[in-house]
Length: 332
Image (cartoon, rainbow, N blue to C red):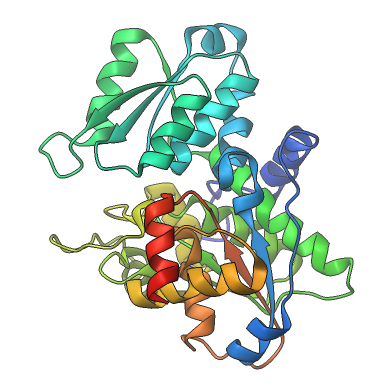
């Protein structure tokens, strides 16, 4: 996307095509508003609750869009993915609906609820050391070659980004039903696939809408990369309980989109995220996982002035271990 003539990694037409494929399969999650949260944030907010999606996160959208378009032979052989949990579950569920075997490479320290959710859809799980010498991509590539499996990448893939982009398409449509349009959208960001899809869909209809990535402190690689207009990785040694957002650097394809369409990146602390999780439970009656609550955390802590216009906050997932969630509520 270095010039106006460059072909973007994902186009608006890819997203509308994905919407047709997902119609009647994925959940068209609602758009929620809450008086108490509006008052706390100092503006008018709407919330897109992807914890209500199949498998409890937006990841099912992209996974189904990809796997459903594989040819019959590829589906019969099976698919493979690497993920800390939400993409794992999305691929496992999409493979189930498409009658394809699934093998998922997951970190040993992935939340138990995400491992259980992945296994419940019939997927085989291979674990690895997240902090070890062999990257997950290498492990998955080796297994894919050994077993003849089709790789379903978590974000650097046109069909994945397009599927995630249906979240943004729904946001625009649902606001239009209220005769409203978004002024800004806050999106949780790991590898950047959700952001790329949402930004592509939203800015097609609302070019002046500002799209902001939101990341946990210490893993704000996309914020730094957007500011510097080049891909930058995270410094070693960081830690966060936002397990869904710990990508080491922005995706190559996703960053091509996000550096052009995003207005900037916001960063939140784990304590701010925990408070947002408690607020979502108290006011929206939703269970939101740490990585899924970062955009709400940014809204409630004044990381951006939300006093003017309409702000949409994407709540990207709700797969959190019960013990951790109970501890967050107890401490808040």
